[in-house]
Image (tube, rainbow, N blue to C red; front, side):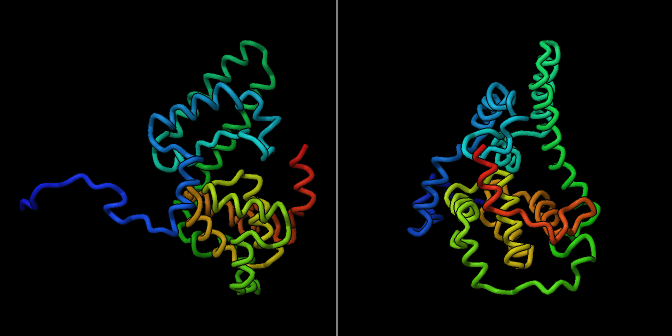
Length: 247
């Protein structure tokens, strides 16, 4: 069936963006540059820059100390095999040079991307994990179903500076350092005692790298729903964490 000519239309013509979205989208555009070419540039910049000191700096949240490749991986602009191959080539070079710090950094980075693949293993074998806990230990836990607390956490108005800064950064840029993700989600589950599925779904709505499997793994890990996860009574104190992340 011939439907007639197809015309080029701008985003404005398609009306995909309303006035309330423009401010947030402008911030996202400054923070991220999508596309295969930009993904390759980001990969090259990380391999030739922060990777060598990844072991020492990966917990720092005040600068670009991690790869920032997760959105590109999520949208298929980079493959995990390509990232692994590039990191392995760097490791071979640094081993030959006797650079122990570089070798350790690659080991830790490869371990971090390995967790991404582990999340796929869990979701494939336990497909219900995006809706209920893998373990049954929290089946009858009395979660606090409080929309007011949930809104305060989302808007970064809890009164805890690191938690609030993280949630505002998430809204403005669509990204959070992994360490800050742990802190804000731990605060959500263990301090506010809100259902972990609420937090998981909010991350799904706001993160540029909102990978379902990684999202599920992270929130189940924090809530103590995985065999190797944090216990529910283990709380990451945001005040102590803020001081540590300054080091």
